[in-house]
Length: 475
Image (cartoon, rainbow, N blue to C red; front, side, top):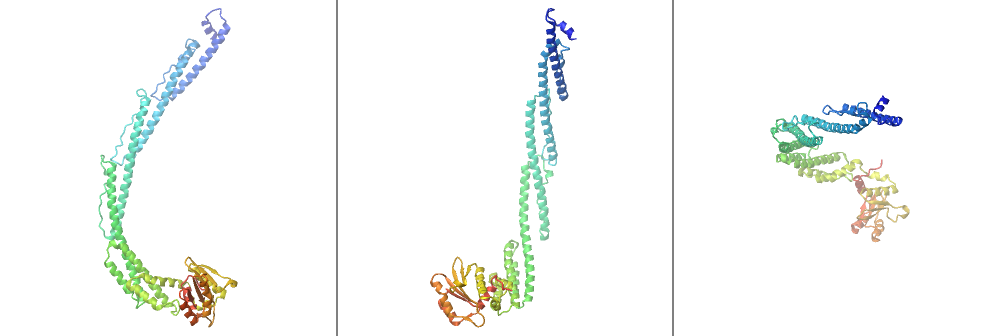
């Protein structure tokens, strides 16, 4: 075939046939390869093209077997590739806009489903598809952009109505709960009208409906305040009833003690009260509760404790109980109740002091002052100098001498005279002498003459102080 084609194209019978054939064959092979490549590309594009895009490129004009030789075929190859490239761009644009169209349609369908419960939302919106032959791709993309903006507006509306629906449902539950709480209080139901969201007209704005819901919530919250006020008053009445019953039992247990005065005071306070005074009544009952608790604590303690104990002042304590009950005054019993609480932990006796050695006794006195908030130093024996314990706080420095005596030994006047010299030296603001025994009459007389700078604590006083402290007697 090559020989026949070559002879047909000879320009001159005298030309170099061999050279010409080589050139022609090379040109033909090049044209054939490019034709096959164009044909293959044409098939790929045709398969990829949607029905709306027609691939009508005449690739056969590149076929050297059906044209006027390879040279003519090569002339058409660039045009064919250019047409195929243009169609490829159209296909890509079609894919892009179609994808965008499908995405918007899917979004629209979801919004329409969400909008269905709300009659006030018009979710009908036609999104036209892409017409390849009649519409420019750039113009269609601009159209889709506007559709996207419309869908965003629709979505905002759907979100707002969904939020309104939640508010509506919450208000309905709130109203039901208030009615449930009002029943035991014999409060009539108040039918605050809540417009159902399902009946909202199509021309109503969501802002109008949410304003309606806001006003309804305000009404319901006002009703809730009234219910809470009456609930609180009911609870305080129940508390008063229970407290009166306990007071009556205490009156039976401790006959002759004026618990009935406290009960009468409760009754009078509630007769003059209203549901607006619940907080005031709560505070009042706190005081009554404290009075009753402390009064019974004091009386019970007196029933079982030795009244001769130095920490127990029975007449004063009973007078305090009577004053608290008759005058409804809690303060008078607080310090007594505090002392009793300390004594309940461990009540000291004079015999407890006798179990301490002299150095243990010094440490005990140091612990007592440390418990009172002082910084304490118990001095060494070799550096005693008359002061066994130094106690210091931000207000004063106290020099303390400790005398552990048993039997009939008593601390005399000379001991005090030697100790007060530390005040004269400026080393202490005050001196204290502590003994497990007693002081002589002359020592007490000297202390009275000296004044506030000298304090005496004998065994009875120390037992009282320790019983009121947090320190416990050794087992």
